[in-house]
Amino acid sequence: MKIKLDGFIIALCVSIAIGYFFPELYTAGEGIYFSWITTIGVSLIFFFYGLKLSFGQIKQSLKNWKVHVLIQFATFVLFPLLVLPFYPLVQSDIQHSFWLSFLFLAALPSTVSSSVVMVSIARGNIPSAIFNASISGLIGIVITPLWMQFFLEFGELNVFKDVYWGLIREIIIPVFLGMILQKFYGSWALRNSKNISLFDKVVILLIVYGSFAESFVSGVFNTVDANYLILVLIGSIVLFFVIYGLLFLLVKYVFRFDIEDQITVLFCGSKKSLTHGSVFGKFLFVNSPNAGLLFLPLMIFHAFQILIVTIIAQRYHKRVD
Image (tube, rainbow, N blue to C red; front, side, top):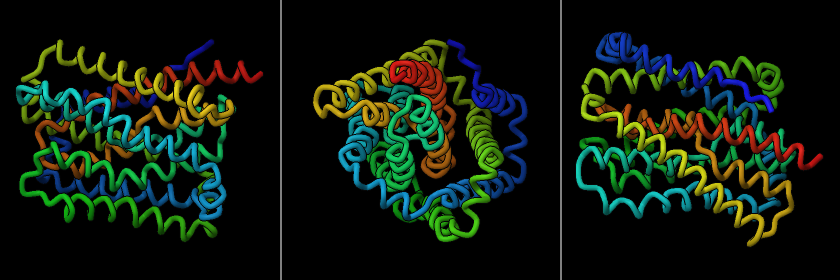
Protein backbone atom coordinates (compact mmCIF):
# COMPACT_ATOMS: atom_id res chain seq x y z
CA MET A 1 0.00 0.00 0.00
CA LYS A 2 1.51 3.28 -1.10
CA ILE A 3 0.90 6.45 0.94
CA LYS A 4 1.73 9.73 -0.75
CA LEU A 5 3.14 12.60 1.30
CA ASP A 6 0.53 15.36 1.48
CA GLY A 7 1.90 18.54 -0.09
CA PHE A 8 -0.45 20.70 1.96
CA ILE A 9 1.04 19.41 5.23
CA ILE A 10 4.49 20.40 3.94
CA ALA A 11 3.12 23.82 2.97
CA LEU A 12 1.73 24.27 6.50
CA CYS A 13 5.19 23.64 7.95
CA VAL A 14 6.70 26.11 5.48
CA SER A 15 4.13 28.77 6.41
CA ILE A 16 5.05 28.37 10.08
CA ALA A 17 8.74 28.70 9.22
CA ILE A 18 8.02 31.88 7.23
CA GLY A 19 6.09 33.20 10.22
CA TYR A 20 9.19 32.63 12.35
CA PHE A 21 11.76 34.16 10.00
CA PHE A 22 9.62 36.85 8.34
CA PRO A 23 6.90 37.99 10.79
CA GLU A 24 7.08 41.51 9.35
CA LEU A 25 4.94 40.38 6.39
CA TYR A 26 2.10 40.02 8.90
CA THR A 27 2.83 43.07 11.04
CA ALA A 28 3.07 45.52 8.11
CA GLY A 29 0.56 48.33 8.55
CA GLU A 30 -0.18 46.98 12.04
CA GLY A 31 -1.71 43.90 10.45
CA ILE A 32 -4.53 45.79 8.72
CA TYR A 33 -3.50 44.86 5.18
CA PHE A 34 -3.11 41.21 6.09
CA SER A 35 -6.47 41.20 7.85
CA TRP A 36 -8.26 42.55 4.77
CA ILE A 37 -6.61 39.97 2.49
CA THR A 38 -7.66 37.06 4.71
CA THR A 39 -11.17 38.48 5.21
CA ILE A 40 -11.76 38.66 1.46
CA GLY A 41 -10.17 35.24 1.00
CA VAL A 42 -12.37 33.58 3.64
CA SER A 43 -15.53 35.09 2.15
CA LEU A 44 -14.59 33.77 -1.28
CA ILE A 45 -13.85 30.29 0.14
CA PHE A 46 -17.39 29.97 1.45
CA PHE A 47 -18.96 31.66 -1.56
CA PHE A 48 -17.39 29.00 -3.81
CA TYR A 49 -18.48 26.38 -1.28
CA GLY A 50 -22.08 27.62 -1.63
CA LEU A 51 -21.82 27.41 -5.41
CA LYS A 52 -21.26 23.65 -5.10
CA LEU A 53 -24.32 23.11 -2.89
CA SER A 54 -27.93 22.87 -3.94
CA PHE A 55 -31.13 22.89 -1.92
CA GLY A 56 -32.20 19.72 -3.74
CA GLN A 57 -29.15 17.78 -2.52
CA ILE A 58 -29.77 18.86 1.06
CA LYS A 59 -33.46 17.91 0.92
CA GLN A 60 -32.71 14.50 -0.59
CA SER A 61 -30.09 13.69 2.06
CA LEU A 62 -32.39 14.38 5.03
CA LYS A 63 -33.91 10.88 4.75
CA ASN A 64 -30.92 9.17 6.39
CA TRP A 65 -31.49 11.06 9.65
CA LYS A 66 -30.03 8.51 12.10
CA VAL A 67 -26.64 8.71 10.42
CA HIS A 68 -26.78 12.53 10.40
CA VAL A 69 -27.73 12.78 14.08
CA LEU A 70 -24.94 10.42 15.16
CA ILE A 71 -22.29 12.25 13.13
CA GLN A 72 -23.29 15.69 14.44
CA PHE A 73 -23.57 14.31 18.00
CA ALA A 74 -20.04 12.92 17.75
CA THR A 75 -18.71 16.12 16.21
CA PHE A 76 -20.16 18.67 18.63
CA VAL A 77 -20.98 16.71 21.81
CA LEU A 78 -18.94 13.52 22.13
CA PHE A 79 -15.66 15.15 21.06
CA PRO A 80 -15.84 18.00 23.64
CA LEU A 81 -17.01 15.60 26.37
CA LEU A 82 -13.75 13.68 25.93
CA VAL A 83 -11.76 16.85 26.70
CA LEU A 84 -13.89 18.45 29.44
CA PRO A 85 -13.02 15.96 32.25
CA PHE A 86 -9.38 17.14 32.15
CA TYR A 87 -10.27 20.78 32.96
CA PRO A 88 -10.01 20.34 36.78
CA LEU A 89 -6.36 19.32 36.27
CA VAL A 90 -5.46 22.76 34.86
CA GLN A 91 -3.20 24.57 37.33
CA SER A 92 -1.22 27.15 35.30
CA ASP A 93 -1.55 29.46 32.31
CA ILE A 94 0.44 27.09 30.08
CA GLN A 95 -1.72 24.15 31.12
CA HIS A 96 -4.81 26.24 30.41
CA SER A 97 -3.55 27.04 26.90
CA PHE A 98 -2.77 23.35 26.38
CA TRP A 99 -6.23 22.23 27.49
CA LEU A 100 -8.00 25.07 25.65
CA SER A 101 -6.27 24.17 22.39
CA PHE A 102 -7.75 20.66 22.63
CA LEU A 103 -11.20 21.97 23.49
CA PHE A 104 -11.01 24.21 20.41
CA LEU A 105 -10.08 21.18 18.30
CA ALA A 106 -12.88 19.11 19.83
CA ALA A 107 -15.55 21.80 19.29
CA LEU A 108 -14.83 22.34 15.58
CA PRO A 109 -16.96 21.09 12.64
CA SER A 110 -16.03 18.09 10.53
CA THR A 111 -14.05 18.41 7.32
CA VAL A 112 -15.77 18.88 3.97
CA SER A 113 -13.76 17.83 0.95
CA SER A 114 -11.48 15.23 2.56
CA SER A 115 -14.40 13.47 4.28
CA VAL A 116 -16.26 13.12 0.99
CA VAL A 117 -13.12 11.96 -0.84
CA MET A 118 -12.29 9.34 1.79
CA VAL A 119 -15.88 8.05 1.96
CA SER A 120 -15.80 7.78 -1.84
CA ILE A 121 -12.55 5.77 -1.77
CA ALA A 122 -13.95 3.44 0.89
CA ARG A 123 -17.24 3.09 -1.03
CA GLY A 124 -19.39 4.52 1.71
CA ASN A 125 -22.62 6.52 1.55
CA ILE A 126 -21.44 9.54 -0.48
CA PRO A 127 -24.72 11.58 -0.42
CA SER A 128 -24.82 11.34 3.38
CA ALA A 129 -21.15 12.31 3.58
CA ILE A 130 -21.77 15.39 1.43
CA PHE A 131 -24.77 16.41 3.53
CA ASN A 132 -23.02 16.00 6.88
CA ALA A 133 -19.80 17.65 5.78
CA SER A 134 -21.83 20.59 4.48
CA ILE A 135 -24.23 21.01 7.40
CA SER A 136 -21.47 20.52 9.99
CA GLY A 137 -19.80 23.81 9.09
CA LEU A 138 -23.04 25.74 9.46
CA ILE A 139 -23.84 24.14 12.83
CA GLY A 140 -20.32 24.87 14.00
CA ILE A 141 -20.82 28.60 13.52
CA VAL A 142 -23.25 28.45 16.44
CA ILE A 143 -21.89 25.59 18.55
CA THR A 144 -18.11 26.19 18.46
CA PRO A 145 -18.21 29.73 19.93
CA LEU A 146 -20.73 28.52 22.53
CA TRP A 147 -18.30 25.88 23.78
CA MET A 148 -15.37 28.32 23.76
CA GLN A 149 -17.08 31.22 25.52
CA PHE A 150 -17.19 29.29 28.81
CA PHE A 151 -13.42 28.91 28.98
CA LEU A 152 -11.86 31.57 26.72
CA GLU A 153 -11.11 35.07 27.99
CA PHE A 154 -12.49 37.43 25.34
CA GLY A 155 -11.60 40.71 27.06
CA GLU A 156 -13.40 43.58 25.37
CA LEU A 157 -14.58 41.31 22.56
CA ASN A 158 -18.35 40.77 22.54
CA VAL A 159 -19.00 37.11 21.65
CA PHE A 160 -22.51 37.56 20.32
CA LYS A 161 -21.82 40.82 18.55
CA ASP A 162 -18.24 40.64 17.28
CA VAL A 163 -17.60 36.89 16.97
CA TYR A 164 -20.98 35.76 15.66
CA TRP A 165 -21.42 38.72 13.36
CA GLY A 166 -17.93 38.14 11.96
CA LEU A 167 -18.74 34.48 11.27
CA ILE A 168 -22.10 35.35 9.75
CA ARG A 169 -20.54 38.05 7.60
CA GLU A 170 -17.66 35.93 6.31
CA ILE A 171 -19.29 32.48 6.19
CA ILE A 172 -23.10 32.37 6.31
CA ILE A 173 -23.81 35.25 3.93
CA PRO A 174 -21.27 34.10 1.28
CA VAL A 175 -22.52 30.48 1.52
CA PHE A 176 -26.16 31.41 0.98
CA LEU A 177 -25.23 33.86 -1.76
CA GLY A 178 -23.36 31.03 -3.47
CA MET A 179 -26.34 28.67 -3.06
CA ILE A 180 -28.65 31.26 -4.60
CA LEU A 181 -26.33 31.59 -7.59
CA GLN A 182 -25.66 27.83 -7.77
CA LYS A 183 -28.06 27.23 -10.66
CA PHE A 184 -26.20 29.82 -12.74
CA TYR A 185 -22.57 29.16 -11.79
CA GLY A 186 -22.66 25.73 -10.08
CA SER A 187 -21.37 23.92 -13.16
CA TRP A 188 -18.49 26.42 -13.42
CA ALA A 189 -17.56 25.75 -9.77
CA LEU A 190 -17.56 21.99 -10.34
CA ARG A 191 -15.38 22.32 -13.46
CA ASN A 192 -12.90 24.45 -11.53
CA SER A 193 -12.91 22.43 -8.29
CA LYS A 194 -9.15 21.91 -8.34
CA ASN A 195 -8.41 25.62 -8.74
CA ILE A 196 -10.93 26.50 -6.03
CA SER A 197 -9.38 23.92 -3.71
CA LEU A 198 -5.95 25.44 -4.34
CA PHE A 199 -7.31 28.90 -3.53
CA ASP A 200 -8.83 27.54 -0.28
CA LYS A 201 -5.49 26.13 0.80
CA VAL A 202 -3.64 29.37 0.07
CA VAL A 203 -6.06 31.32 2.29
CA ILE A 204 -5.68 28.74 5.09
CA LEU A 205 -1.89 28.99 4.81
CA LEU A 206 -2.12 32.78 5.13
CA ILE A 207 -4.25 32.51 8.29
CA VAL A 208 -1.89 29.94 9.81
CA TYR A 209 1.11 32.11 8.91
CA GLY A 210 -0.50 35.15 10.56
CA SER A 211 -1.36 33.26 13.76
CA PHE A 212 2.14 31.87 14.19
CA ALA A 213 3.85 35.12 13.17
CA GLU A 214 1.93 36.92 15.92
CA SER A 215 2.85 34.22 18.43
CA PHE A 216 6.52 34.32 17.47
CA VAL A 217 6.59 38.11 17.80
CA SER A 218 4.97 37.93 21.25
CA GLY A 219 7.48 35.27 22.34
CA VAL A 220 4.82 32.82 23.52
CA PHE A 221 6.74 29.82 22.15
CA ASN A 222 9.64 30.72 24.42
CA THR A 223 7.44 29.72 27.36
CA VAL A 224 7.07 26.09 26.23
CA ASP A 225 9.61 23.30 25.79
CA ALA A 226 9.94 20.11 23.74
CA ASN A 227 7.90 18.16 26.29
CA TYR A 228 4.92 20.45 25.62
CA LEU A 229 5.09 19.75 21.88
CA ILE A 230 5.46 16.00 22.47
CA LEU A 231 2.37 16.00 24.71
CA VAL A 232 0.41 17.90 22.05
CA LEU A 233 1.42 15.27 19.48
CA ILE A 234 0.48 12.35 21.75
CA GLY A 235 -2.78 13.99 22.84
CA SER A 236 -3.87 14.63 19.25
CA ILE A 237 -3.22 11.03 18.19
CA VAL A 238 -4.88 9.53 21.27
CA LEU A 239 -7.95 11.75 20.81
CA PHE A 240 -8.37 10.51 17.24
CA PHE A 241 -8.17 6.84 18.16
CA VAL A 242 -10.53 7.21 21.13
CA ILE A 243 -13.26 8.95 19.08
CA TYR A 244 -12.79 6.56 16.16
CA GLY A 245 -13.00 3.55 18.49
CA LEU A 246 -16.16 4.83 20.19
CA LEU A 247 -17.83 5.47 16.84
CA PHE A 248 -16.84 2.02 15.60
CA LEU A 249 -18.55 0.41 18.60
CA LEU A 250 -21.67 2.54 18.12
CA VAL A 251 -22.16 1.95 14.39
CA LYS A 252 -21.33 -1.75 14.46
CA TYR A 253 -22.81 -3.01 17.71
CA VAL A 254 -25.34 -0.42 18.90
CA PHE A 255 -26.99 1.01 15.77
CA ARG A 256 -25.92 -1.86 13.47
CA PHE A 257 -25.68 0.34 10.37
CA ASP A 258 -24.89 -1.25 7.02
CA ILE A 259 -21.28 -1.05 5.83
CA GLU A 260 -21.82 2.10 3.71
CA ASP A 261 -23.32 4.07 6.61
CA GLN A 262 -20.66 2.72 9.00
CA ILE A 263 -17.94 4.13 6.76
CA THR A 264 -19.70 7.50 6.51
CA VAL A 265 -20.13 7.86 10.28
CA LEU A 266 -16.55 6.76 11.02
CA PHE A 267 -14.97 9.12 8.51
CA CYS A 268 -17.19 12.19 8.96
CA GLY A 269 -17.61 11.87 12.73
CA SER A 270 -13.92 11.45 13.57
CA LYS A 271 -12.50 14.34 11.53
CA LYS A 272 -12.02 18.04 12.20
CA SER A 273 -11.84 20.89 9.71
CA LEU A 274 -8.66 22.94 9.45
CA THR A 275 -10.52 25.31 7.12
CA HIS A 276 -13.19 26.16 9.69
CA GLY A 277 -10.65 26.06 12.50
CA SER A 278 -8.52 28.67 10.78
CA VAL A 279 -11.51 30.92 10.18
CA PHE A 280 -13.07 30.46 13.62
CA GLY A 281 -9.71 31.05 15.31
CA LYS A 282 -9.39 34.32 13.43
CA PHE A 283 -12.34 35.63 15.45
CA LEU A 284 -12.05 33.66 18.68
CA PHE A 285 -8.34 34.33 19.17
CA VAL A 286 -8.21 37.87 17.78
CA ASN A 287 -5.20 39.72 19.20
CA SER A 288 -4.33 36.66 21.31
CA PRO A 289 -0.57 36.10 21.67
CA ASN A 290 -1.29 32.38 22.23
CA ALA A 291 -2.95 31.87 18.83
CA GLY A 292 -0.09 29.72 17.53
CA LEU A 293 -0.24 27.42 20.56
CA LEU A 294 -4.01 27.13 20.27
CA PHE A 295 -3.73 26.00 16.63
CA LEU A 296 -1.11 23.30 17.25
CA PRO A 297 -3.36 20.31 18.12
CA LEU A 298 -5.65 21.10 15.19
CA MET A 299 -2.76 21.09 12.72
CA ILE A 300 -1.33 17.84 14.10
CA PHE A 301 -4.77 16.23 14.21
CA HIS A 302 -5.43 17.35 10.62
CA ALA A 303 -2.19 15.81 9.36
CA PHE A 304 -2.70 12.58 11.28
CA GLN A 305 -6.35 12.14 10.27
CA ILE A 306 -5.42 12.43 6.59
CA LEU A 307 -2.69 9.80 6.99
CA ILE A 308 -4.60 7.24 9.02
CA VAL A 309 -8.00 7.65 7.30
CA THR A 310 -6.32 7.23 3.91
CA ILE A 311 -4.97 3.87 5.09
CA ILE A 312 -8.35 2.85 6.55
CA ALA A 313 -10.22 3.96 3.41
CA GLN A 314 -7.98 1.83 1.20
CA ARG A 315 -8.57 -1.19 3.42
CA TYR A 316 -12.34 -0.67 3.35
CA HIS A 317 -12.12 -0.43 -0.44
CA LYS A 318 -10.42 -3.82 -0.65
CA ARG A 319 -12.83 -5.29 1.90
CA VAL A 320 -15.83 -4.26 -0.20
CA ASP A 321 -14.15 -5.89 -3.20
